[in-house]
View (tube, rainbow, N blue to C red):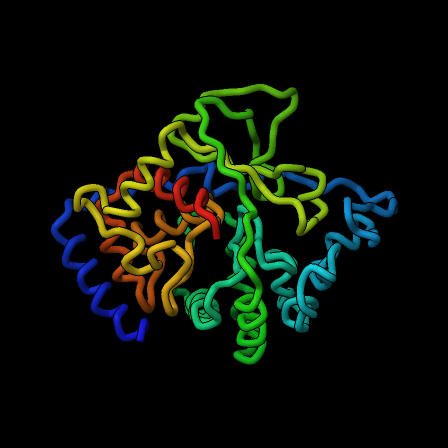
Length: 322
């Protein structure tokens, strides 16, 4: 029944957005499209077994960096992973769980897959494979790897992985904090991390999403989440845009994503997901870099949004309980 209602609702969204004045898209915000500085080199491995809290397992740095074997610190925290999630099958086809983690919650440089509709995941992999889905930042290694993996996978591998992640619960993974000042950061490991010596700076119109515990995140500990610092007042502003469309400027997100932003039919949930990821997707849609099913409808909805609107929407959706 929900599937039948969606086209009608999306049609209304197009009509509303078409009446709004489009905003000229600008350069992608570097804080959302984090790129490693040139010449970045990994630390050498001295062979020391590394550990994380709550796990009896240990891995060396070399093992943690093996793209063909997912470091699974907490095997009791999720069902048995299929091969397409746990182990690479052939050159260039890395297991999904390495980037998206065994629990599907992901990191700021990629996407949370936990609880997304399997149909949606399959469709997005196909879009990466066909070139319909691209990033505004061509230097993004996570996106380039995703495209490479998508081109090398079979339909059966994609479907198996999609069904695995769809069955996982989406959990609270990101702590949202409104503030006027944030830690000074730099990019390392394709995400923002605190700089040394420690210092603060004004947040401006940015979202600073970073690990709660950098060491655990670097070890790919799927039990250690993230904090997202957002501008003061942005959650309330985002609530107005998301829930009412801010007096008709755009379409309320709940029309398509559900009243609680937990998804509707094949449309993905937004609640509790990475705000950096949400910002990237809204920018990419506004720039026409995401094509395929439903994309034209979303482009019309995001066309009137300003950069400040996008920050507010991402702050609000990240603050909602999954």
